[in-house]
Image 1: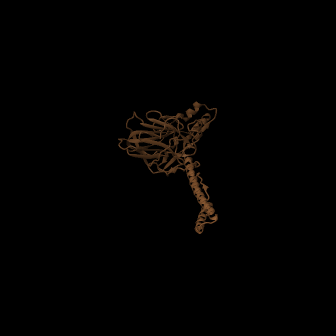
Image 2: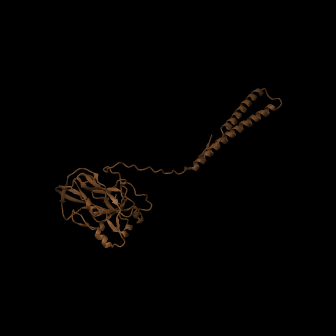
Image 3: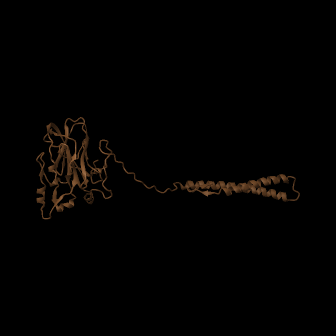
Length: 353
């Protein structure tokens, strides 16, 4: 999703950028959408921006299920960063992953479940409850650096959530943490404070993650759309298909080539049958002229034969006989030529030889 200079999206480890459905503007600072989640899959929160010329640094704070999951301070300039887990030590992080919800028994009341879900984030002591379950939230704020502090382990705040059995139909998952993995070694982290305490953030992105089956059942993913698209390089208002991402030269990861789709070609047909018929008529006329010429020659030879048979023919008989023989040979040659080159009708309706 895009808001101002920042573009934020969720990237799955094996599917690339997750498609965004029903992108909407909640208020003048907030945009929200739905994304498909798959149990057991790791994901990371990515953001891109160009903040050259801005006076203050931007603090990108991430929340999962309403729990603070870390912050990144971005200096003015070209911004390209992501958060893929929670730091548990100076050189290790536990990656984010989608997980199943723990279900309570049918005898538990919703008020009891809600009370179980309420927890507090150490960063600001703000209560977080079940209303934030199933969301990944990113806020942007202008801050000033105030110093540094030791790295803290905050992974204990992210544990599998528990909801009532009847909530299973809502398609809810939760965010859990995978096994720890190595990361860049740091022993301290930056501290900062808001430039203006009355403005806790100037932009907010909310990703509502649900199972793909639930999104299809609710009509959030259109029926005519196949399996949720892979990475896919924009905010679209209303219930529409997933926004398709444009190529991003800032986005990390291997290139993804689109598969070529074979489109069957329609059978070839004669586009101009009248032209083919016209050519056929011309060929017939030419053959008719040749036939008339041969007939004329045959008639002339016949007259010469009759003259030679009459009593008292002239001494020119020998010459006429030679002429007759020549004419006969020519006529025979034309007949033989026509036999050896029979007329054929081409595939497009054209006469050919």
